[in-house]
Image 1 (tube, rainbow, N blue to C red):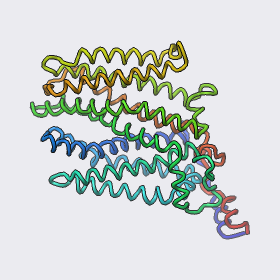
Image 2 (image 1 turned 180 degrees about the vertical axis):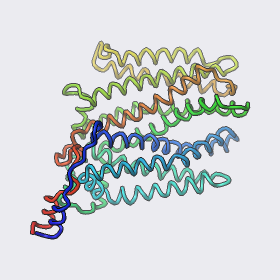
Image 3 (image 1 turned 135 degrees about the vertical axis):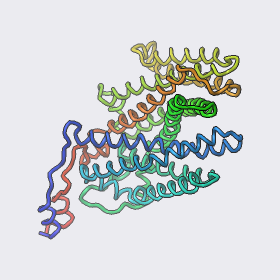
Image 4 (image 1 turned 90 degrees about the vertical axis):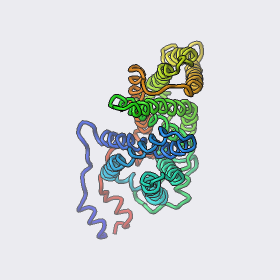
Length: 439
């Protein structure tokens, strides 16, 4: 028997199981906390240079101040999100050593190399050449935004690979018994699976939507603490920008989400668990909960625009927003009601489309009135709606991640029975024995 085999047998460790939450639960909680901060970072890394550019072009000091505030938030909270990311890596290496080794080796050139390089370049450009520069370098900020989106695309490709198992006809990931660094071609094939393209768009729109609602909620809270008319005008203006920015990208998500689900249906059996085509599952229940939350997000966005239009000196825009908002509310409630399939099967989707188009009508009316708004004295109801939108948008984003990952259970890589969600023995003598030839 070879020395590596004897060493592995001598240090065989038991599998680890966390009480109450279990291994899946603790990994999921840690990852969701990381996603909370990471999503904000991505949204603000893209939004800050765009606001800076807009502020310079329009000579708008509010836009430039908001850009600095978003960048300042990223600088202060990046280490928090990174800490939870490291904790996540520690947990998956310790609890799921085999599948972690497979993913790290199969995507070696894309995750440990290219993705980490993109993150380093993002931090360098964003912090040194955008945040710390006396005249914030918009080009450096936009380059940092491009690198963080590249990082998101690489990790999203690995994530969708775990959900689909790769494209049809592609060889499966390497088993734990024959690990070798994956080639560029094999890793790229895994990244560019049928679901990855639409998931990338969906995540980009989501990462620009709910952080905007979060910025609006922050501004609504900070307005309470404002002492000067200048601060009150700025924070009131920021609530409106957050509402507009969040709603614009919220409108795009249902369309990309549909294409995302369609690509999942064509490439993965996990679609059945997500949609409950063979009976209700925990994941399909999460999908319905998410649908209810999304409808609430659209309705609250309309309410926020209706109340915010009160800033107009003639209350212009309120009448069309009230009409479109009522249409959005009625169609959204119909879509989540038991009558959603009456008089025919696709009525739910038609009602959701009506809700989206009605919200678009409200947004157009709000933008037309926005040019004459007087900022500095928002109503209490408006600020309460902005706070609710920020919280609700965060819940929707986290629930989507939970729902998507849970749809591949009981696999960590869908369809590959050797990679299941149960925690594994950290050292597996049989695998080492096969590698050593059992001598």
